[in-house]
Image 1 (cartoon, rainbow, N blue to C red):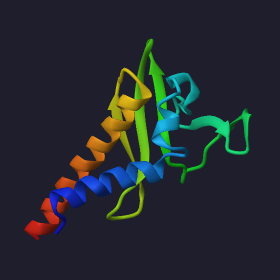
Image 2 (image 1 turned 90 degrees about the vertical axis):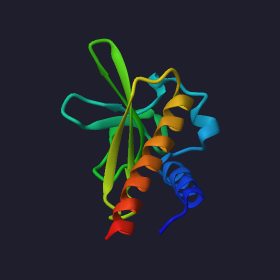
Image 3 (image 1 turned 180 degrees about the vertical axis):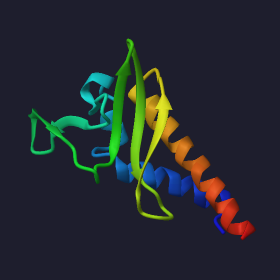
Image 4 (image 1 turned 30 degrees about the vertical axis):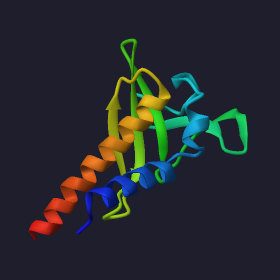
Length: 123
């Protein structure tokens, strides 16, 4: 069983490991500089070795992305589930900034960890 402080630290680490760059660097970006989720669910963004090139990310990609629908922007986190190691995704909804989206991602992952930790404790 994980303690609340272990859960909080794990959530920060899970989000940090999903991001391609440090939070400090990403917080300087706007939503337009992040990968975008297309209508069909594919994620496109800058190539890791050439930011001028636009590419489709594969099914194992993790990171922070945005989707735009009807003029609104929502942030999403793709990350590795600590329990199953499968890729998971979390809708973070509209956020005022990339920094706020990263904080929302940490809170979302923390809530997931708390939930699954309670299920494991009850078992």
